[in-house]
Image (tube, rainbow, N blue to C red; front, side, top):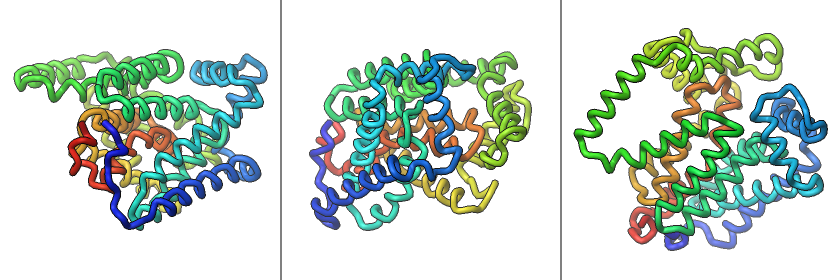
Length: 348
């Protein structure tokens, strides 16, 4: 697989495309340094907690914050901002340099700006996620064999899930299911679906609580302490204690997270809606048209989306977590831009 084998349409010249990519990097660096203190309070809340942990070494925060602080603290203090900038600029360039058509240049700010403001304005948990995403992306780009890419994903997501965010293990499990599923005979698929249905019906309430209960806990916390900061939180309509309540809660979350105008109708919800449309459209394109390692990247983003519907407690968190792995949709983006699937060599 080699993304460089594609031929882009001639709508935009290469020089203009490069200038466009550099332009967004300059905007990002301007936001990062002279203008960062003017960003909304909730934008840098996690970063401030991690910075405190790196300074003190102790705290009452969750394990995910403690381990993230330990990882980032391994980088010399003077280089931490530079490290974040390198990851941020690389991600921005990979997205913007794959745009060719005029319409895409109008859509680009709606995708790139949320990525900037929510993920790469300070060392956070998303810094690690973006770094993993770049490693996985370049592995997919350089390797023609899915085994190497899958090993990289299993190693990175396994380590990250075991130490920082346990739900990454569920994302990994879903990806492996997507990879194996097409290779199974019809009888095996039927047996597995039946076994999965029975297993879900028999799960104890504690497991359903573990999957969806955090949404209610976060909503309770926001409603009592941070409602003036986080306004788009929501809880489960039913207690997560059985299979049917699980399905209803999941369906409710899918509706609210992906149709944000249900909650509010401000420009922020419109921005999220545009991002959601782009995410799902590119996911559909990638799943339908891409092959090999490119398909695995799309399946990985799809796995993220499916798992995020389980527990995301507010719209801003959904935007932050999904946009942090947008890099996996770059092959699908390139496909819509340059008809990638029309060139078999690029998808092998």
